[in-house]
Amino acid sequence: MTAPLSLRLTGASVLRDGKMVNRSVAIEDGRISKGPLPEVNLRGYFILPGIIDLHGTDFLRHVISGQSHSTALRATDQAAAANGVTTAWLSQNWSWAEQGPHSPAAAEALLSALAAYRAQALSDLRIQIACETHTVDSADRLLEAVRRFQVDQVVFRNSLPQALLHPDPRPDARARLHSAEAQKSAVPRYLCRLAEAFDTLGVTYGSFEDPDGETRETFSMIGAKVCTCPTRRAAAALARAVGDPVLLRASDVTSPGPALPVTDLIRARLCDALVSELSYPALSAAAFQLAIRGVMPLPAAWALISQRPAEILRLHDRGVIDYGRRADLAIVNRATRQVEATLCGGRISHLSGLAATRFLGARADMAMAAE
Image (cartoon, rainbow, N blue to C red):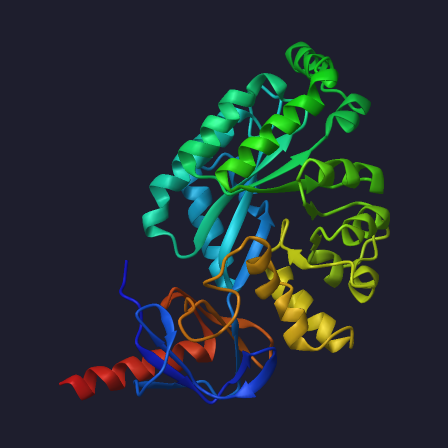
């Protein structure tokens, strides 16, 4: 891995202290710093905090297409970096399936693959376990995986009702489905056991796709506070009423769907952060769309994909541009609103367009000066 840069980025409009300001950003030893350093002129750009994505499933399409975990991780890592993402949770199911990409075995394989890949990763990649509620018989196995691989985020989900409506016709799949259904009475005790263990381990946990306020309230009562991608406004409203953070899909800002008007929820302050789900480009696009439509200023919109996610997962070293914080930066062309450079821990993880010319020219000047 290359050493972090020691540079001063000048001429850009920088998001600091909740507003856009014209000032330089110094980077040294992977952190935001002070002092005289070689300069890169970024006039015509925004310098914004690196994006923190709390829930993404883009990598699954690579796995389902037959790619190895290492290849899927590399492709996902590159896509994240190319879109300004510096910290990302890849959401992996832990279901009642015996085999396939959503099984406990698949989750364990991904966790092992990421542990091996992490040394070469461009971004800070982590795993979020999406635990099916009816997996009572795998409790010990799940907790062992969480401990061994230091998983720091879990969401509970219940896809059983949908699966029962459209059952897999294969006999073994039907058997697993009915076995999961038979665990219904043990689910509440199981979830409470997991919640108690997660509290001890410092794991942040929540729920995924809550269909109503009652479901959200039930999860909130056991400590599963993070409300991820609720399917109804009532679930988001209940989360807001009890102080639980609400995460919504960024793609629903750029391509609104009929089920949940996400922009309306954001206007009503029923959203704390945006997540990528299937689309890393949607994150920055959503922030700019919110600003262009007048829903909120750009600093507040960008906070939905940087500062607020950092606060929710208690990442005190990132999410904003400030002295001593990690040098996680997204550098965006002001004219095109495209991410042209991404820095993760002071290292370049993505570089393209005119920004590449600026950085490479500055490095050439530094090399000549050294000679």
